[in-house]
Amino acid sequence: MPNIALKEGSRPPWVGLAAAVWVLIAAGNGSNFALYSPSLKSVLGLNQQQITILGVANDIGENVGLLPGIACNKFPPWALLSVGCVFCFLGYGVLWLAVTQTVIGLPYWLIWVALVVATNSTTWFGTAVLVTNMRNFPFSRGTVSGILKGYAGIAAAVYTAIYILVLKDSDSKLLLLLTLGIPILCLAMMYFIRPCTPASGEESSDHAHFIFSQVASVLLALYLLITTIISDVVSLNDTVSCILVLILVIVLISPLAIPVKMTLFPAAKKRNVPPSDSSDHLVPKEGESTPTDSLLTPSSSTTNLGSFYENEDALDADMLLAVGEGAVKKRRRPRRGEDFKIREAIIKADFWLLWIVSFLGIGAGVTVLNNLAQIGVAFGLENTTLLLTLFSFCNFVGRIGSGAVSEHFVRSLFVALT
Image (cartoon, rainbow, N blue to C red; front, top):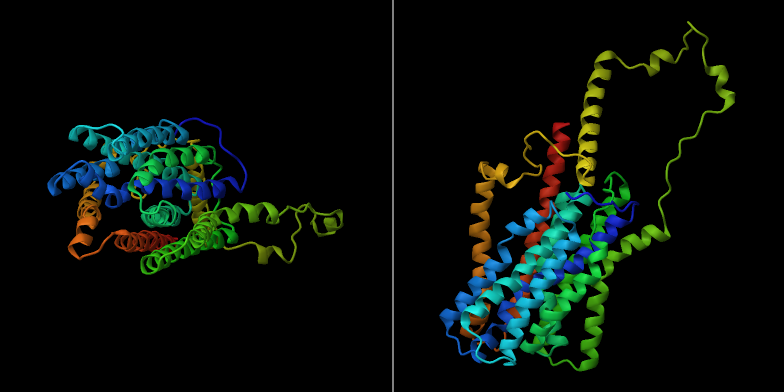
């Protein structure tokens, strides 16, 4: 992790988490291929095989994140976000020029490369905010990962709602939004995505804050699903569309309520009260003992066992905080659950097991996602907005559910071992 100044205080990690929600919504740009692929097919005169190959380019750009993974340990988050903004602007800019026929006769290979570059911005955005926030919340990595990946999963439904309510099903306007809107949004959030003093995770309010964030994301997913179904059944006028978009924005900024609440209603800090002089008579003279000595002095076995657990827990907690702050670098080989370098990871069976599971699971999902437009046509649907929203909703449920379940079992295992 680069040597940069840490933002101190109890609120900055939560401010960064709220900003990360918007960045990850923007990072869902790779899931929009089904919305504008029909325009690429019709305007450029492509056949189904060529569209499928463009879908492969979309998948390659969206899922190949080795470079941002390496860069996140060498550069600050703003540098990764800047690269993502440049890639997004260049890649989607070329696609917009092609669909609007501003530039006629662009070669097919250039469209393919532009799509790889455009969707590769997702990995730079996602890596920057995920790694930073997991370091800012070292005691709640599973929960934070589940919340943020959940928002990334529901991003397709957010874009679909904007596509229907604001852009009026215009593919060229959608590509212009991806070209200009995403870089502007990420540049605006760049200051807040930064390493902070890690949250302790020991306050009771932290658990309530995470519950609030999860509930807000669930409400967002349900709202998007209901809105898309309503817009598909009835025709909405401009006034209703604006109201629905305003509600969407309010739900999206709801995680910001946590740092606002912490600012307006700060938690009372425990203060160490110095002993008063009136307790001097309780202090025994040299060589004397008090009747409470035998009650306050634990047995040797209890002392040894308690000190063992306390020292171990304190060591683990200090190590997590120090690693999150970048204050220490572990020289021993990492254990399961800790951060691995790429050379250390590829020799582990766990790495290849995760790779195989990801290849099979994610591969099936992106194959369906890339062909949603053709699936909709096969079923006689005029547009694929409802299919994409349903896919995004199920994607969201799996992501946020896996984060909550994994954190539950990790904490249960920790309690069992201690």
